[in-house]
Picture (spheres, rainbow, N blue to C red):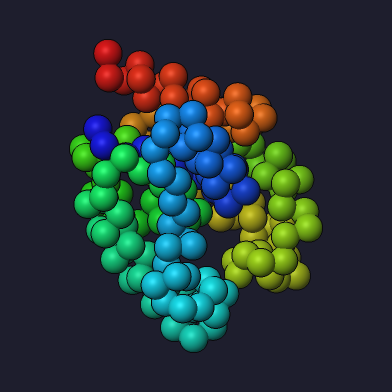
Length: 170
């Protein structure tokens, strides 16, 4: 296995945990949404506004293909990336997909002041989060090679991911 690709619901800690894993392993950290923003020259919110969700998802798929060809990365995927089979197929068997599994109550607490995520900018935010979480969690679990609890501190979770990936190699 080459890269470690973190998946999970928004707010589960993919970026924070990913940076910690990168520091501990000497691999390079890359946030998929930031990668897409840099290539597009606009924020994810601006991409959603200009091209809609489907336009963003096409850019995301291209990013998945490009990143899967790179080596020694710790990749924080976007929250929706692994809800699309085509993105899963790009990484499957080549890279290790790790689900950071965090209960929705913890995620809601972590995102309580978030104003940047396009899918949360709505009046029925709690209901929307519940529906999205219920829809996405089974998809994440089916995509993942390994599931790690993301309820601990970011550094403890990073060590859990490193241990789980190393155990897979045995």
